[in-house]
Image 1 (tube, helix red, strand yellow):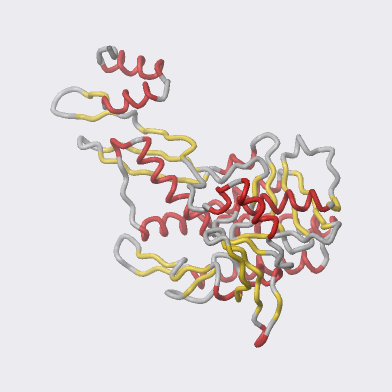
Image 2 (cartoon, rainbow, N blue to C red):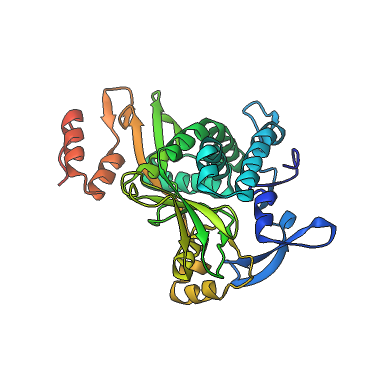
Length: 351
């Protein structure tokens, strides 16, 4: 971490260096494929995967807040765990350091530019689905929302990971593992999802929206999440019931390795990293699937919208149901819910 109001890395350089080649002044160049341009080039680790003031924001009183220094011990501990495991990647170490590894993965996953983008995408999706309560948030508000939820949700993600089946994956051919600027790839094509809740207050129907990550994604049947620790080893987290008979350690052939690499391509926001600089497989994949070169697509959506209390607005007379909400329920095929609300609030059936 670099300090407040500086270029702060959302993907630690110490992690990324494992895919790099050391050069002068101990700087590492990492072979990088840019999904936006479709081109590859070596990039020095301190010149990629950062944003200025990524961990800084202004609170409601206008005070400048930076958690960069506060979180440094957390990142240092996580990187120590990463180094320890990579020095001796074995089932025994995986088992012995299970809690530390789960905490490290949870922290890196949550404290990422991808999750912050997920929150922004979810807010847009919320406004699309509930336009009658449009919520406006600037970059500072989204940053604050993201920064505040990271330490709160790390224990939840950690606990979920500890309940999953862990499988140590090793490369068994010349093909190495790739990684990306968001190296958490879900095998079923899912992404971190968002839930949203709106509390309606007062006669003017002013609402306070709460967007949250939806950790239940990791608890879905047959779900898998792949995280490469280095070009030669990584962990596959899976549904403990479905993968109960799977071995704790596997050596992968070329085809299996490339399948995990393909997941990294779709998981990454913009950049793919490969130690061998061979991105021909990405280029071939892009020819068959243009989405590979279009990383601007929304990665997340609102999994659920809860309204508390129900969508009503209060004028000088009795409560009235918002007609736009009823129209939306009908358009979503939720006719029974719409009918119940029409009966409750004395609104005529749709003709």
